[in-house]
Image 1 (tube, one colour):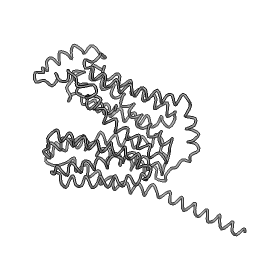
Image 2: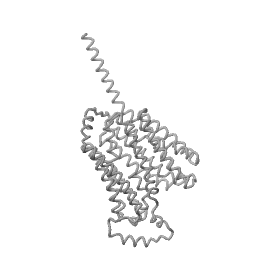
Image 3: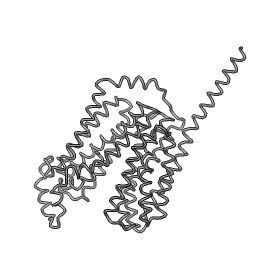
Image 4: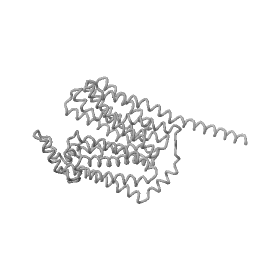
Length: 425
């Protein structure tokens, strides 16, 4: 919810600081930079400090950022606040994955799917909370009137430039961010409560009882997983961001139909993440990744092959959203089977996902502008599906090869022990 609330309230925030949307686009760069810094710092801290305490503090910092954002009256202050807010999000993203693996280990696949389903559910609920629960602001409606005068905007900017923080005129903007911030604050209280009742001692005792695993090609696996999540998350965000404009300009759909198509992609994405909680109890993470790769390959191939067909666009978009849903949590559960993930390890592939989120949509937007007649978005999705489908067998080979050698060594040792026992008899 904290990540998704920025999109539907972006215009309201721009008006709150007396800027237009194009001049405030740095807010996304600031948040993404904060997420990367928070991921790197959190990955180090989670290996040396209590995880419940760090998650509680990160959630509390997130709540403070949500409270402050509507009160920022200058663009620079808003970007700085958004960067600090993004750092808390990056720490929570890394810490939550590490904590689930520390608590459940190899049996944490359903819990990991539930965590990422809650992420998808929050992304669906945030726009509804911003625009339906609290309604559309009157100031936003006036902002879009044809008689809007830029001179009045400059005068109001001069009038409010003396104040860094002030109560926003748009109270719906304030209530949207305050409600999500209050929810984050309640969660942080529960996490700090877990720390205070010293559940960390039980966690440390169970963690010490578990034997840590480290694959022979541990670093190579993390590098390949970095690339895997870079292309996967980049393709997911690119398709979700550009499918609306692609459907209207390339296929010729009405805006209302394109909006429904975009909702179908995210709807099937969230629904399959919810179903994956139950599938993860009967299917191995590697099997779920293979099925997801096959679905992504087939659907993106048909999207490229029949890029002008509205019927194919509807069907393939639904299949593509469903196929992309379980890859990220299944990938984390899969790698934990072969090598124990620490905070630094988890931060490495979370950074890859964040870079894919930042870089790929920006590059595709530039290429689509240079080649407006080509379905660049669909080519990107197909290329990413091929790349991830090739990467996973390589990761599987690297992960299983050391284990096979270890098993062979154990078998030889057991055979020698059995032979020596029989000879003594």
